[in-house]
Image 1 (tube, one colour):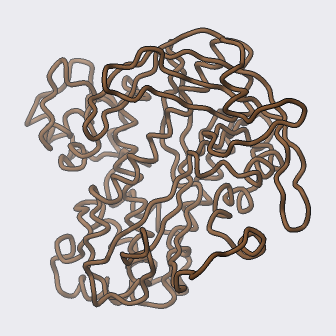
Image 2 (tube, one colour):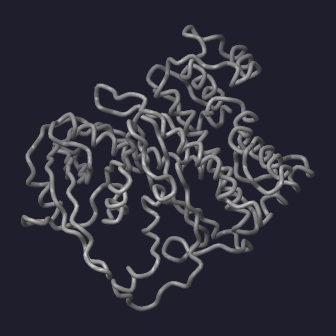
Image 3 (cartoon, helix red, strand yellow):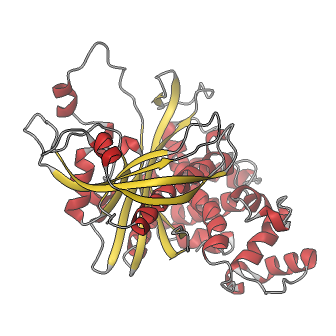
Length: 444
């Protein structure tokens, strides 16, 4: 569903949305098609006719058009696709959408350090492992949003100190982690799902939930959890674990730091972690593997890579530890997704006047962002796969051939996306690598 015309994509994604009226569904499909063709966050640009723009405003302002109703069909299709035989990474993270500058918008909540206004978005992004490279790097294709949650902090900030017992007895935002499995259940026989998340997801209930549903996990450790039968916490035990060997990990560019390759040493062992206290009694102890990935010689002035990972994956061999590190490294995918949502679709630029309207719009643009990101990955995961020309449309191919000629290898996933990205400013020189989602989006 990634590489096809905006009209076909919009019909496939939203044509079955249950909005209480077939006319609303048809309007949603038209709106989604326009936003996919010209993503930018504000409606007047893709919907240039006043009648279409007015209809879109009326649709998104309708109380029946909720974020969940807009996305529900997509979630169901993604979960069903992840039931096909294979291996899938389910990557979770939270971001916030900032509308602090939109002073007239109603229904927003606290974000950041309570100084801004907007709402929070928690995403479970599903990716299929198409193959593993010789360097144990997973080549991924986006399946879609496995689940997504949106909420506002509309309560007043708590004043004074709140006891741990009081905090644990009430509803907590931390309960969003791994909540997708309460909706979708676990994988069918012969299918592997691996839950991947950063340090904020180091929660005992998360490990209990993945175990309950038969889902594997790789989570970066955050809590100094104590072992049952030996001295030390997980960080200390990881540092004393047997050395499995060394390998290299490619690190992406970050603000102030260029992309580089790090040589790391891996230590790994099994550990049984004592169950933490809860108001209704201690949780049961949990046995899992702990893997330490530490850079041996970082560049001068650069903090070396150091991950302590909690996982259910086996870690007896160096190859297994390498695969764990590379799978956790795929967490960058959800950061790219959030970038596509904010910078690519321009979600934070919308001038809608209510949080309800913004969240209904998010229901559409969140899937546009999946499409943008999927275009990038399709060129990496299956570069030589021939393109289905009927999906993309003869007009698009005619434009690309007139501009750049027909590629020697024919119209494959990679050659097509490179040509589209060239329209968006990608130079396609030998050393330029694969195009990024931003140039692909501009090319569209």
